[in-house]
Image 1 (cartoon, one colour):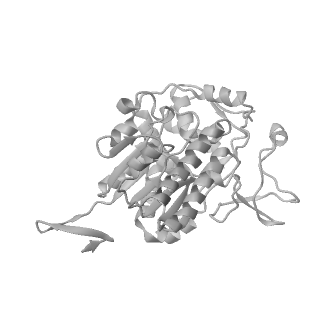
Image 2 (cartoon, rainbow, N blue to C red; image 1 turned 135 degrees about the vertical axis):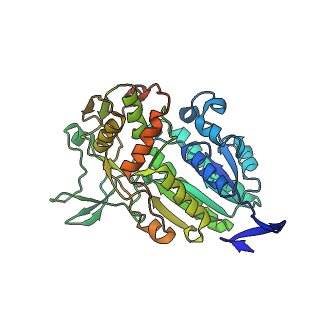
Image 3 (cartoon, rainbow, N blue to C red; image 1 turned 60 degrees about the vertical axis):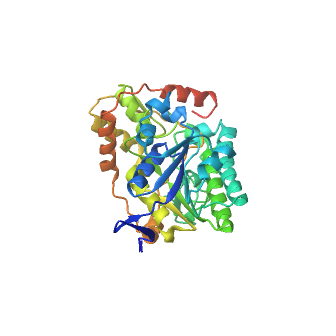
Length: 396
């Protein structure tokens, strides 16, 4: 007998759903730990491979990291790295599905830690595929975490040219306070539209390059191995549990920590740059559909809300929700390589997987700030990260 495609084993006149075995790399991280707990509740047997990076988990992670401690006694945990063949072999074992989340993240940091990002993100994925190509395993599906960073600048409509994809903005223009993108031989303003999966791929960071490489290797190699590939291009994921001490990723965490330390917020450019913020529960639901649904196999999906929110709107909402009066300064500073706008077209995932985000930004942000209020105030190292980028010539 089968229920939802899963074999049931009869014991003592009851049917027990047989557990599917799944490996989650980076499974102790923000997305990974939430996905691990979600799958365990649904009868999966979860193995986690994670190196417990100090940048994400802090020091003494095995005893102090809330993300790791939430899954510690519920999964088969392997402390290791995706750059180690021994760790991969140990982790893959008899797992039937791999969700490959492990990666170095952060667009700015990737521009001066190029070798590290390449070795972990590209090299780690290549090693996984090499092992699968040269050994008999039980793996039948791989879900790989891609990123909106692969697109670079978003999609626009030009009155003269139709759909266009502007290139990186120049320092000269941004020094003059001209932050909006332009396109050659246009006389009318460009109209920002949602970026769909068929949009031009032109990443503006090493991180984006490595994520696209990961995605393409998985989508290209897996079919030849009889393994079903699925790729999710996640937008800006946020929610309770994300790191409040990592200054390199996530403006919600960065701004929240500054506010809780009664420090001013420095908004880059003119504050009108925008992103698509997607709540963690929605990301987990989308990923689960990719694991469970046959319709996802061989497909690439955007995962977002389909709504653009400006950085100034983010800062104003955070200040309002925390009820803390601090200076919010729009300074005109900028990071080289930052995109201006990008938000997801989610029509494909809605149509094929019936996915629809359950959380609008204000609702999700309130849940996030309520959680932050329950946490110990973290020391902010944001200024250190800014000084580091300035020293590398990436911050103006």
